[in-house]
Length: 116
Length: 115
Image 1 (cartoon, each protein chain N blue to C red):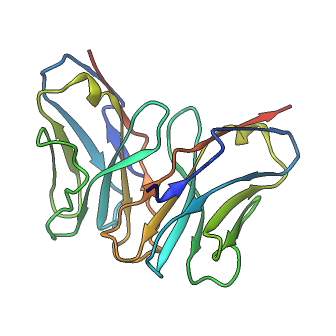
Image 2: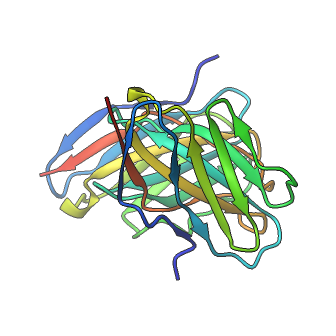
Image 3: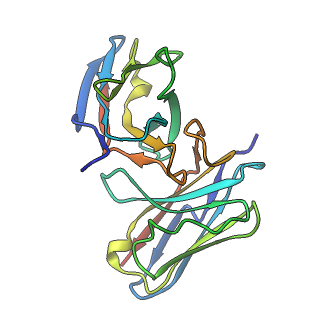
């Protein structure tokens, strides 16, 4: 079946502009996660959604970052007033459900964001 | 303190040989899961193998096996019969049972397979 998809695959923007990144999870997956990967680094957790519960925003680095998800479908990550340090690959993952240590997350191809 | 430590920034292995990638973890949660992901140069994160904290046996998936030593808090990935296509970044990650669900990643090990 279809995996996690993300768009755009690449985004170049100017400092100070807002950007929106999109994630389509695997059908039937109730949990959705956003991570950030800076060049040469591991992944940093940003935010996650589980069904209709309030999202866990504990990983968002600043109030310039926000995310939405409609039900158990598409999610958008918005970065306002982008800064050069926001340049990174933004990865989305989905899984069947949260709360179990066994729950495997499947990742999308990522969006490479470059802030000039 | 880092929860996931991968001490090998880079590793080389000869094609067809086995290689072990190290991972140690730190948690006080008795319930947790350990994951290994592969990230080729194309950037996608590919799930390889999972080990649960209560699993009695080491996990295996094809050429991948996980050497789980709970008392030492290590979860090393063993790749047998290395192939050129195994060249990639490898990330160890942990999910704690009490957490909301996010994975905690190590910094990764870059594996290069030599022909």
